[in-house]
Length: 89
Length: 111
Image (tube, rainbow over all chains, first blue to last red):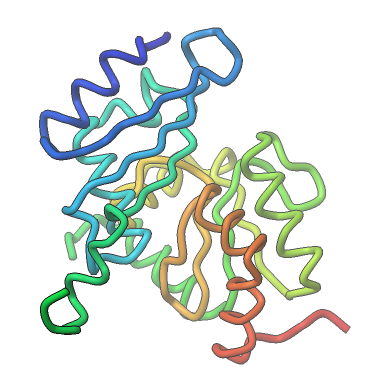
């Protein structure tokens, strides 16, 4: 069973509306993907929690119809700076 | 935590062994590339670990996914704590974080 990259992106954006999603079809078979997801929702979360948010967005498809999705997650650049009070720039 | 009976079994494994890898196949004979990659990273770091073959136990295979709120295998536990799946462990191995974690947690290395 396979899933289209656009469908993966749609599901992720449905739960993480600000997400920047980059999906690569690793083998061109619609079954092995790598996704890079950037969302402010990841700020301050551990990597495990970040990935769990993405898995939750995929509503149980991960490990089922979606066989392989290598995940890389991060909070937007500059977001960390927002947490450090450096005064006005 | 739910009262799923397999959870007690999983809990015991991760309490009794400092490093536990839930995987498809065994460390010597992995049955999946993702499981093989994590087992290999642990072997490269010379850390003692217990591999649990989820293919040999369907209850654990389903149970571990719920237990960790994680949909895929492999899953690595260190001192009772869920560290991550293949992507996270691979990334941590490459950055040296994994070795640091093992040192911090004081896990045993193979002789």
